Image 1 (cartoon, rainbow, N blue to C red):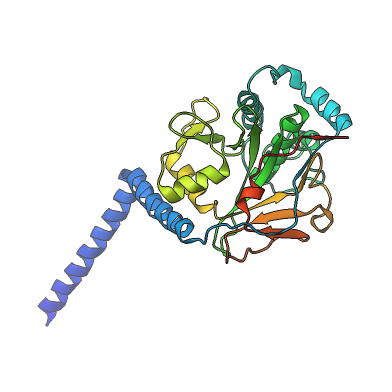
Image 2: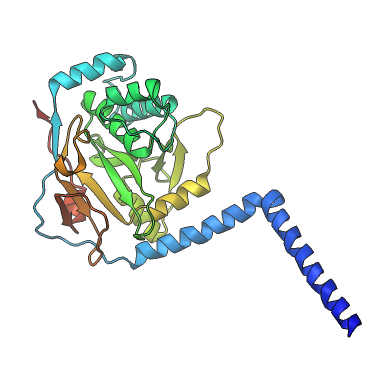
Length: 304
């Protein structure tokens, strides 16, 4: 009996040693391989959710995106940031947008700020990073870039990109820029410092990225900055497969559109797959399944 217990004890001890050794190998030796594998499993799961989502369809939801240019705020923003030293108005729109995105990415890192800024516009957000906290999250990144682009007369929106899981409190906010030379939208991400193209180098919109995940088409990820820092392509690819299930966007874009309290802001347009019920949507939001109208070519800037 004692011999049997001794054998069992050695077996248990051996299993413990093997488990510890496996953990150490996964933690320190094959860490990158394990992380890549787990990320791949997550990526496949998120893509399957996109593929199983009901298709978009035309509907009669009443909304109309409006792009407003406040000439006084435009002048103030241009002078404060000396945008004439950053923006080349004779260049193609995409090159101009990248120059502004790189300016934001280079000067403001990502962080989840502990103190919320009272005023959410480009100038006050810049002052916030100099006097309160040096970095902030993707939403504030996108608001700031939105106003810099607008001050250069580049039509754009910032879009909240959300997952299917209501228990997942993480989302991502990026800018989409209208490229009149190509008659299409293109996504740029100053917070995570990247953009995405097809194999020919044409920048992709959020809608195109979503379709390519579903169809398995190739996409190429491009870091915004060549600053010697490593870029986690696997994580970025997986992160986007999670956050392309549904979208929110302000119906009216201009300056300071998120400075007012949430319940006093303008309407938000929510694009969702048919049959899906979005969660935690803003007050006064309008829901649609009409992707064609949500991603339609923009009207000209309204000058005020």
